[in-house]
Length: 359
Image (tube, rainbow, N blue to C red):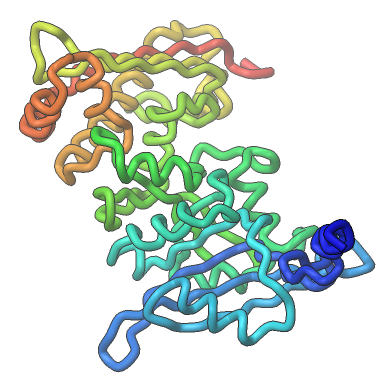
């Protein structure tokens, strides 16, 4: 009798904890917006669900979007479950979109929810949806083989590669929100018909978006943060205007032990002249290199001073400073006083490798 009881307990056919694949909805993207209802701010939670299909052709993949408004994100998800006939599976969620209005209000609760759930991967891509997260989820490009695949290719460096696209993943956003000396950022995705425009980044003060950089500033920040080496340097003088397409890029930050209120920044890049309104091959290239160095110095300093004025530090200068000192909290308190008056000792060097296939 005891043996028979054990056999009955080990049979899994009657278990409700496991559901077959045809009884699941795979959530590919989550969108969060702020919505005002009766004078109160609530969460508008939107899910993009994949609908399995026997045919697998470009542009034919079907999806479904379900939204609900509630006081909390888990509360909205529970109501969404009442509107679908299958179990929601978040194991394939790769896209997390924060609406622009919610980003300006605060993303602490949203990031807290995403990181607490064990079925949402830490490598999921986070972004700001403009004008709203729901608009981004409703945008479907004609080249997608799967729903949300266009965004995954854009941020994963699998498809397109652009100096204007900065990738933010859930684990890194959470780290930056809780780490002293570096602030979080999220790329801004805009819906334009049946395509996306990704060329800006929003900067946060641990909680709210305080500053949105323009495309040129976004490119410069990407270079300084991630050594991005493929970009263009447009140089204009009275004599010549040319564009240098870089192939190599290096940068370094170093705090001087003698002067705590100064950071030495070295930038070096080199590339090929892709466009010029004059012949350059027979002339002295050093003159043109100096012009590119001066133009780049002005651009980098303008960005650094803008971040300093806004009291934002996405590069992580505060972490570099405290890492070079050994007094713990005292160093951090000292850095908060130093950063508003920090001097950027910037040195830029440029190198022209050639003028392309023509003189």
